[in-house]
Amino acid sequence: MTVNLVGTVHQMTVQEVSDQGYLLLKGTEKAILPNEVVERKLEVDDSIDVFVYHDKRGKLIATAELPKVVRGLYSWVEVIEAVPNLGVFVDIGAGVEVLVSMDDLPLFQSAWPVEGDKLYVTLTTDKKERLLAVTGSERDFSDLFTFASDIDLNADVSGYVIRTDREGAVIITDEPHYRAFIHHTEREREPRLGEHVTGRVIEVKEDGTLNVSLLPLKHERMDDDAEKIFAYLTEAGGEMPFGDKSDPEAIRATFQMSKSAFKRALGRLMKEKKIEQRDGKTYLK
Image (cartoon, rainbow, N blue to C red; front, side, top):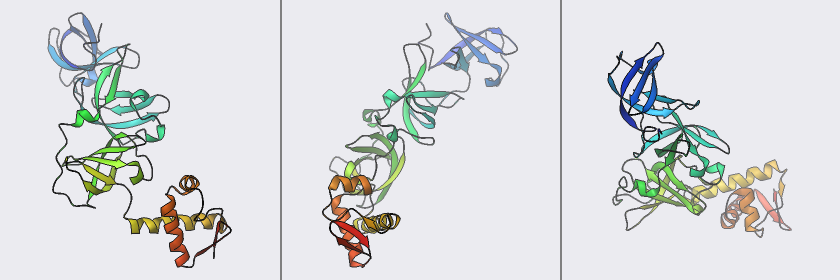
């Protein structure tokens, strides 16, 4: 079995040399080391440190170029492709692309990483000894987090999303590495796992973690909400079946804002004499 070789770095010995490359041996396990991934010429019985994995045809391949991550160790890697109903592929270096299974990703594909996002992963193998990448849990970040103390409210912080669900999202900020939580009411949409986001600090907690909002300040948000409603009315021909007594869920589904934010925006537009309300509907003036 090759389970102890795949996804790790081993010192292997050259058993045979051919025009295509080298046949390496460790115990009873054999791997092919192609010529193009070797910087120096090798001879029979030479030893070399290699990373071992299966190619798409199932052959055991070795490379002398070592990747960013191996089994048992975590590192940041970049997402190169998302495949619906399968997962996402990440580049671990050394010319090796590895799948992060959909079982290790958020339930909804809208929260899956896309090309360019970054994940903190380690390597494992499935029952067929195929190499897989698995994302780190919050526990795997515990040694990276720094206690937050000297940071101002409304200060901007940026970082990568390491957990996301309907309740909220957790990011690890760029250095210094703080743990920051984004409640679902402090975002317009659920951020993607691995997405790099920027928000503002709304609370520094006693345990040294942060609460962060991805929403603008209230006065800035009201401007955005008013513009969104005004644009909707314009596109709808100057009339919409929404007013200050409309159903909150219908408002959120249509405008992605709470009813209180919707009413504030309507009030602003009415004060500016841009709209009027009649019979539960809103019209452009």
